[in-house]
Length: 125
Figure 1 (cartoon, rainbow, N blue to C red):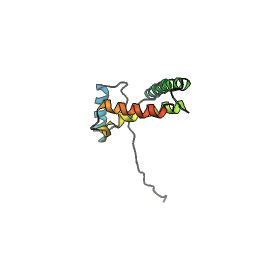
Figure 2: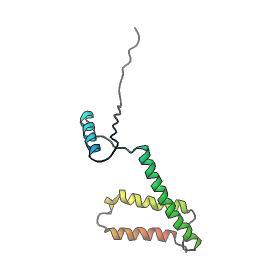
Figure 3: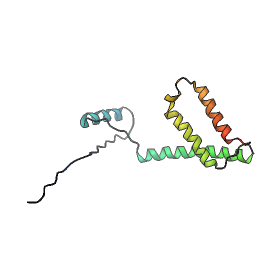
């Protein structure tokens, strides 16, 4: 008799698409949670991700242009304006995602410290 192999299912992926955000999506997630008895995970479409990437690139280009102009005018001493532009965007994004670490600090104080960090780091000496 042939060896019997045990069939085991480790993971099942259930996708649902509603075509829009808002109430329709919330209802669909609730149904999915009830059916699967698991908490659903929301992801972005490829087009939505590409849109976010495009926005990020436009911000990087904007910051890079400012840094390059500052370099030409002798106000900044930045070796790699693109990398610094990406770093500024990263700093801003991380601040928004990790703001709970800033409890006890007023927003104007945080902004002032971030501005000082950036401007002192890129200023020409």
